[in-house]
Amino acid sequence: MSAITTAADEQIDYIPLTESDPGTRSRGKRRKRQIRLVLWGVPIIVFILIAIFGPMIVPYDSVTVRTGDRLKSPGTVLRDGSTAWLGTDQVGRDMLAQVLQGARISLLVGAATVVLAGLIGMFVGVIAGYRGGFLDSLLMRLADIQLAFPSIIFAIMIAAVIGPSVVNVIITLAITRWVVFARISRAAVLSVKEQEFVTAARAIGADAPRQLTRHIVPSIIAPLIVIATVEIGLVIIAEASLSFLGLGTPPSQPSWGQTIAQGRDYLNNAWWISTIPGIALCLVVISVGVFGDRLRDYLDPRMQKG
Amino acid sequence: MAHYILQRLLYAVFVLWGALTVIFLVVRILPGDPASMMLGAGATQTEIDALRQNLGLDASLPEQYVSFMSEAARLDFGESLWLRRPVLDSIGERIAATGRLAIAAVILAVAISFPLGIVAALRQRGPIDYAVSVLSLIGQSVPGFWLGIMLILIFARQLRWLPSAGSQTPQHLILPAITLALPLVGVLTRLVRSGLLEVMHEDYIRTARAKGIAPHAVLTRHAMRNMLIPVITVLGIQLGNLLGGAVIVETVFGWPGIGRLLVDAITKRDYPLVQAAILFITTTFVLINLIVDLSYVYLDPRIRLR
Image 1 (cartoon, rainbow over the protein chains, first blue to last red):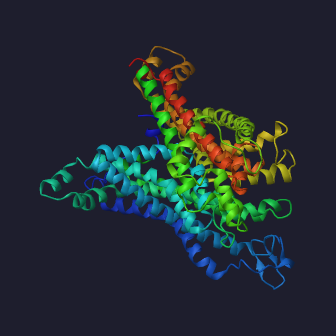
Image 2 (spheres, rainbow over the protein chains, first blue to last red):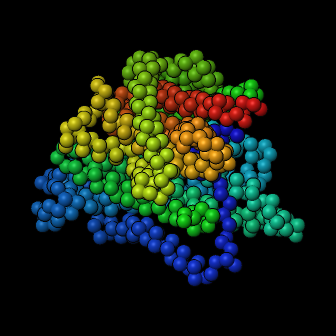
Image 3 (cartoon, each protein chain N blue to C red):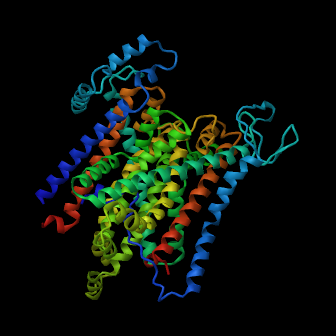
């Protein structure tokens, strides 16, 4: 196999995940590990809650321009008596409201893209791995061709043609990310389909759809979930990058990438416009990344760090 | 060995053909007519038709495909509508600038990540090892465009040590090269560390030590060489991400490379230029992977002797 075919974008190989052996691990220990895993997920839950309820509490208004309150630094009391805790932007819009609205878009695009790309990838990968032969070669060569493009370049190309909107960003990024899921699913199916429980199902007369839906797919879900958490971080960064280039969300939907781009012109007198959404972006991506690591350790006991 | 080289060459040609076909199809089949997008909302139908004819978009799809492929093979990409000059000339100028930036970033990344990774592996679980894992997490979580803006804010605007945009002097190279190198540093350091840890437990290392070879010679002559294979594989793939990252970094720092040309061409809706820029970036990526594949012939005796 070649460099292009062996290593997917982010060098994720399929690692067969095994249930931890109940004989060697007491129920109490397992419970402790579960609690620890949930604790690592707390920052993500907090961000999700912020994304859902934040814009309700501090509503974002993309239309009103308040020239008297332009470029105010964080903590300034505005003319109407309210406090701009994170400052205001170049037309006097509240940065806090903008960052909260951006959280909604980032997380929505991240989750929707990964679900869409995951479903497409799983479908292609499972079919390719289960059927094998010509169909398998065809689908996997298609994946190879797509990996010839640096993924952001592929996204830029599609986004430039279909134009900016939140739905289009999700479609664009799903098209650029399905390959990883397809490869992982295919590898997983290849290793699962010859195992005894599948052979047994076949022996008692289960047809292909039943084997796939009842036996094969459920046993490849765990590695896909691990990859999905890794991918969410990459997708959120990709969305921000596209929006930064003006190819992502439209101006009426302020995503973090867009706000950071606007702040570039005001670096001398208003550092907070570019800085604050970027910090939010990094925090989300880091907490998703750390949780992804822990989840992988949890699902695959052999990968645990000492 | 000859068989391996021939196989890799044919594979590269196949992937390149596929990538060209994808570029062709994306521009022509996805919703959104290039001609009307190029002319904007105010264009009349006659103007659109004239441009369609000029671009060859009025021919049937198979006819367009044949002329697209033969033009690409002859490197004849027509004239840029925005710059009013042959596309190939503009691309030639810009590729050199991107090359300088990418080479500087790779040198920087290798110079930082090899020593760090080696120290982290030799002093496992020490403070440097811990710092390395934090650094690699940050390297992969901080989006390049935001990092670039923050470096401009700190080193160009506040401290006034370095220029923020342009490419006139060697100082102009520093900030963009750091921005481009950081994600690579994260990936490479981790890889050098884990590769070295794995290799150091091999029997031939123990043999070398037992023979009384000095520790640094064991490291450089026995361990490093074997560790290089996965490192070079990943470096090849990461160079693709580097080319993608260059699009963003060049936009942030006003670096006159092919990435910025691509973004500008998209804003100006200059389809011949967009098509050619994507084609060049993709071709470069495929060629890099081909070189990586061929370098195994020298690095891995198992291929050479086959």
